[in-house]
Amino acid sequence: MDRHLVQRLGFALLSLVALVVVAPILLVVGAVVVRGSGAINWEFLTAMPRDGMKAGGILPALVGTVILTLGTALAAIPVGVGGAIYLSEYARDTWLTRAIRLAIINLAGIPSVVYGLFGLGLFVLFLQFGTSILAGSLTLAIMTLPVIISASEEALRAVPTEFRTVSASLGGTRWQGIRHIVLPQALPGIITGVILGLLRAAGETAPILFTVAAFYLPRLPRSPFDQTMALPYHLYVTSTQVPGMPMKIQYGTALVLLALVLSMNVVATIIRSYYRKRRQW
Amino acid sequence: MDETRQTRGGEFLIESFIRVIGVSSIGFVGLIFLFLLREGIPFFFEVEPGNLLGTRWYPTFDLFGMLPLLLGSVLVTVIAMGIALPLGVATAIFVREVAPNWAREILKPLIEVLAGIPSVVLGFFGMTLIAPLVRETLGVPTGLTAFTGALILAYMALPTIISVAEDALDAVPKSYRDAGLAMGATQWQTIWRVVVPAARSGIVTAMMLGMGRAIGETMAVMMVTGNAARMPLALDSLFQPVRTMTATVAAEMGEVAQGSTHYRALFAIGIILFLLTFVINLAAASTIFKKRRRGGLR
Image (cartoon, rainbow over the protein chains, first blue to last red):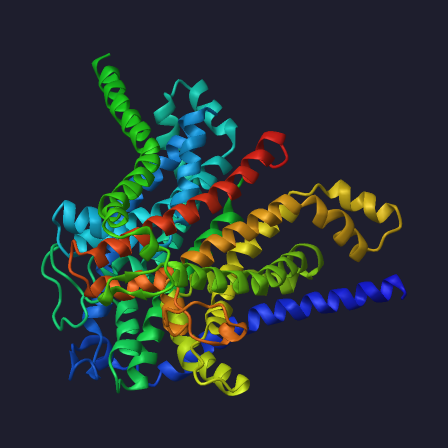
């Protein structure tokens, strides 16, 4: 067969595969939007669930997810960004650095349900935080760390070495160079990485199953030691654990969760592309 | 003078803090393993090896055979990789080597969207739309099967596979492609006989990282595989319900008494999962480090 014909057929096949990969993504998002949008109204977003969750709204789940995500951010950002600064600015290529990188790769690969077990063992039982927002947030934070560290390190490394050299030649100490020159330059990249990490945390179910999630708790949490409902767990519960649940509520919950996560995704993408265009190096 | 010394003192504190935090990742991995061991190790003394390696998982009757769960995870993961690897590598090749700019601009954000969709949403989608489809097209009694799970898992592993494979293709020097084309090969021939072989190790890494994700995925799998703990050995077990290790932990932990054998058994599964993904990621990491040492990437 003519090899140019082979090439044309091959390329056609590749684009077909790309379509097979992409089409279901549109299908999932489309199905959730179409079937879920009927459920969305002011009451659904701002009311407590009623009748064993078969009516009313999803307010406590929505608020719970927002609080958990903020708690995760509070714990994960300092440690994640600090770790990235260490790796990019301080660490030399030693066995220790290699061990740290290995640890980060492994943290990223540990199954989410294993994080749940760990959170149960350490935070809920050993430290006696109980099934609480504190325990859930800390569990999610450790799970989010590798994403934040990798993305922040990449952003820090992208800042040209000359910036650091010039800062040092002006008499700045290493930390001054990092604090006033490198960090501000890397900030958009770091923020993008943080958001990408947090959106994973917001959508996760398995790590919060045994550390914070409440099956049905129609009130807002009052303290960090309170349990709370959460959107992903609410979707799981309403779609598998409660018979006779109206589809509308399930799809509505899925839509709110998806909208929350995807809008974070969009914000991250916008920040990244905006600053990439404006960047002068 | 005083002021300088003060900033120096403050800096020393900050820098020490950063050094401590830098090493903390190792501490976290250690801590995770430690607490899994603490809660799970007694299980291996409480239960006889014969029971442990048995083929029946009925915790209420003190039967803790882990083989069906292990094989369930393996079956679902292997089939998922069989679907995801060709799709992922082909998509990476398309995006990196063939696609026009506009197609790339559409594909890459969409794949990022896929990476961002929570697994519980994919599981819900699989339950309500894919499972009935599987049931009707294959004429099986339930659509919640190993195959349905593998299908969903494949798509969940795709973003990882695509992005790592793309990086691997990216790292192949342009001169390789130029040389191929200069020899009179078509672009197609150059891709398959020069570029892809040169990116081989990166593609293997992509496969392993994708596999690690697939074996550890929990919610979606739990929602679409039907969760029947039986040995998936029959020829048609792909189209029957199956139960994975992750789903077992997630589904049963809420109902066990703390400190019971069943509770410890679930932590023991956690230990197995931890070790499995640890080995897979270690293997993936070793290919990454090897490339770095050769100076191929950076």
